[in-house]
Length: 483
Length: 117
Image (cartoon, rainbow over all chains, first blue to last red; front, side, top):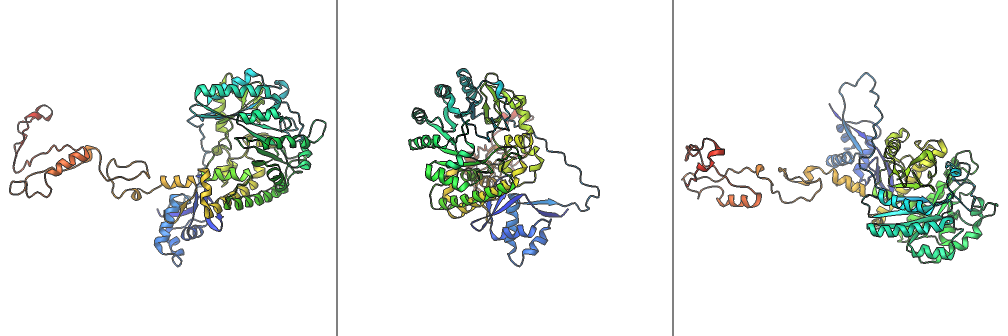
């Protein structure tokens, strides 16, 4: 049986003009030389015999160069070598059964617990998934505020599920988190005390809309090393479109002074902004300028609003394109900063670069239901904070623990190998089908791949790979921070 | 690798995991292999059962002076490779009845005597 060569699975990209490969599914990044580029070009999309391949390149490269290039490409699986049957089968190829996915043999310890200390909010942001038109939680049947006992049980649950992890993350969320300042304060003090007894470090963080950042609360945040993320959509005009009080009044004038106060404090954990992009608020660059340069946030991260497609504020195709262009503009700026040894604050690039550098190849799009879980006000445990309070996405309770059968079933059904839509996509090691909550809101099914932003994800991943390649080319020491 | 350069962490791991054995060691010796890519030490075979040494004998004149290796070679083997030189004399020429009193090695091994050339 003669050996044939065929193209393996990879995405080719350029880093500052130099040829690079992103291999799928390993997520390894290799830089190519001229001979290996020529080999891949010569193979193209067909099956080719070694002798034909060598002949087609013989006028450009010495044979040993071609041979070693093929050897190395086969080794990293950029090229597949296979034995071709002498007589091709007449019958059609047998249908390959869907790969069997088994739940991970080793349980992933819980490292992050997102505790929804309240489901109440003092703002009425039109696009909110918790209260708006796309809500999935049974908020009316649950207490609006978590009580102290449940908060402490949540902390115990986190420690109990954290296995041999030396450090755990306790994150408070809402509603508006600070509406239940009283309980989260008690919960964190309890967590630190129990952590000291158990020899585990507790990293705490919270997300807030910024309306309640009074000086005493800011003091407490600074003293307790609490990482803070402020949900904010930009300057006054941008913020006040959707982030409004119940009477429709914009919230910018209330939160801007609070945020300035917070940012002027010396915090061990840097303060970040988290922006929700909508069809009406897509000027990423000007939002970034305001939040990073004028307000002084340490990092600014953007995410498109999670909503069903027919909503007025849903980002449609042309909107995704506009968003991509601006992300790319900021990515180019990030690269410029990185090469000059300066820190850029666009966290979407930074986070993706870190994932590329580590070579993450995800079995699931995120840690929800594995290393991360969310707790509702009544102590029900769900996949993540976005599902906390939804009875259909419940995985257990903080007092009774995790229902392992439910968890295993969930992990099996949501494994990337179960998403046939993703099986041919080169971006799947990083995307893995995207956010469950987004899928649930768009398609009514957490297992559904987020097909509405595939093109966007591939383009954006390619942009980040190019930034990564360019940094690797011109200032590789910059990447050491991700080691 | 000569043509490709591993850039990210995963690529470095792929590189390590797929090293060709011929790149790791010049010589294939029993029990030598560690994990692919582990540092290669001296090619000292470990484990007595993998060592074959014919032991010392006598030279054509009946002495040891003309042997191709000195008898001390055995001591060295013993020192380096946990090899115990349990040497058998030449049963064809010099000691054909060396094991005559040893019907069963397990029972009678004490009866086997030393032989001096």
